[in-house]
Length: 473
Image 1: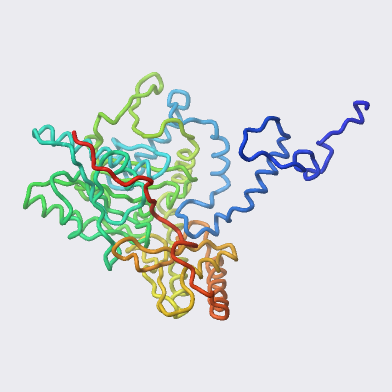
Image 2 (image 1 turned 120 degrees about the vertical axis):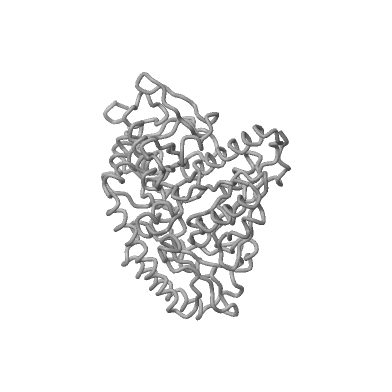
């Protein structure tokens, strides 16, 4: 056969090529190379089975970006933010973002802000927890007291706090969910003692979207200190609420304006509008971050302090965060988040108007994040919220149904998180599909309602091995 007559996959239609007419390996490392066109098509087509991210109303994470932000992400794809000496301007943008956030959250001296970017809010939360543990341990040892049984007090929290407690030998004293769905000051006081390293107050609860009352819990801890001498700090988990309240409910006092708040975490890739992989940890003052947790790296011929659990990670998320802060500013964020709240309230009105549901949270910006949560008003109906979630999925909508934590685990709810890019028009399309889904379920109810263990959405995780007692010392 002459060279000109040799077979050439590049002349074939992509789906007629040799790579696409044989099964790709799935469990063994491939022996041969593959045309990039064919490899791309294989992976691209498999991903068609994923849901459409913008129709995923369970996620808190960013699913829409400005084209300019996408361009900056592409241009920054090879930048390792840990390499401060090689990418000094990326390090500078990170430093600016920390100062801007310290100003936004009313740190006493934003110009000397102490904070860091992280892979996400979970890493940031763990850094806040670690700092609290080390501060507590230093105080105990300075006083000649045992420092072997630290505990952390919280309400129903995101799983990152359960992981923190497990990974770093801290007892998690997690209060059950009340009828009001949020941690109360009395629950905090009932669980605090001399070994409490901090109280975690969730500002934008995962289960319902509601804000826990940071100011009220701080006041209760002030009273506890006056009566007992126990000085217990607060860490605010503002993963979801930190980038909405300053713009849409500025009268709420929850951040560093409260002296007892020593640290907080926010999720840049949630309501911060950055791409996935952006979180921030901030401390009220430099002394609130123990020096033992800080490492120095080369930066422009000098040393730059850093703190973090992860090491190498992409710089694009920080770069696009800075872009978004510049692009929107206070006024732009207010407009974007106000639009999300308006959509949430519109959804709450539409869902309530069906007469089938009781709205638990209606998207009030003073009470929580841009979200709506509801439960069924009729427990005798032949279908439940899990059936409704499955019915909506047939139209591409991911609207999670799940049971609440103890002591409200008998109550199932559904929740929508309204994010940037979810318009009023999309909300109307969803409401139309919800009403049609209810009609179909009424006409053809399932032979048995869907169990709560299927078709739902989990906010927690079950450890593979039961918790062991914290190590002494």
